[in-house]
Image 1 (cartoon, rainbow, N blue to C red):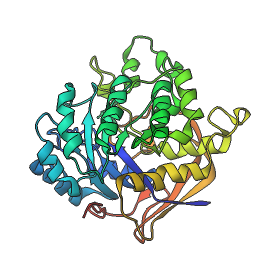
Image 2 (image 1 turned 90 degrees about the vertical axis):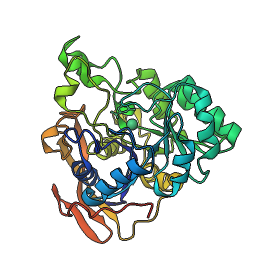
Image 3 (image 1 turned 30 degrees about the vertical axis):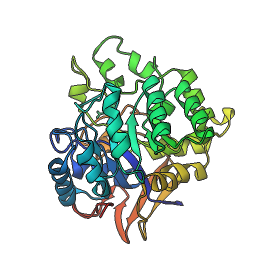
Image 4 (image 1 turned 180 degrees about the horizontal axis):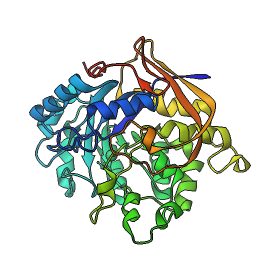
Length: 365
Ligand code: DOR
Ligand code: ZN
């Protein structure tokens, strides 16, 4: 049995308010605990989006009554709310800016709309940018011009990791995260191609899209550039994923740790290609770095116990997420979360959630 600090996921989507048939604060934070996460930061692209004092209150009140692990709530950057969100910074996890096309309505196309947010959001918190490829380069330029931290969400490509490496070498305040699905899945991918153009195809939809093997290799080769592992837990139901208009996103809270522990054990592509990930890396990227980047508080008397020898197959039917599927169905992994202790209380043990809704606390209070 190994003991690890409670994991921190700086990027999850719980669908409350607005789409709790996909997930809500109860099922989402239960999935977090089952996956070994004791703290999660929730994204603002709900319905309505979280972008001012009223909507932040709605999200925080819901979380207060329902969350089973500790949490923070992002505010979203809109075309004309820079003053409002800056004033909410001490109550929010951080500011999220959507600079590319994805799920929800919070998108900022015009770069002139970015300026007030970069000027006004307090510099002790990062601006988290959903920015791919060239818009990522633009977001890093904005960080340099305004001499403030920007955290690039879910990087997925070789060009992105190499550009971030170069920007860090110049002293620009940029950090980044990568998601397990961008480390373990590629496009085209046999598991999704089986159905050809058929209904199963929508299941591979995710933003950023799954990338090529060359990109995946570059992420593994440059793990030292990557500050955090984040799940981008983005639950949509199977019915929605298999529809004519499949929304992008994968659930990820309950598969991240076993996938990454399997990579620690055998290397990402099997032991033959060597181990590119250590347990120490994992602790850095899933606890120490997110805590530093987002200024998150300590969680006293908090740890998780993992049976690193337990080998099993991932099954959606055993998960707590409401969405009912996983892109990793049937994957053989090694490493099972046995116990989660959160602030002195056993919150999860042997497949059972043992704390009530409302046990989780807001990390910004
Ligand atoms: O695949 C994604 N799904 N990417 C995002 O940026 C948003 C997310 C969602 O909310 O479903
Ligand atoms: Zn996301």
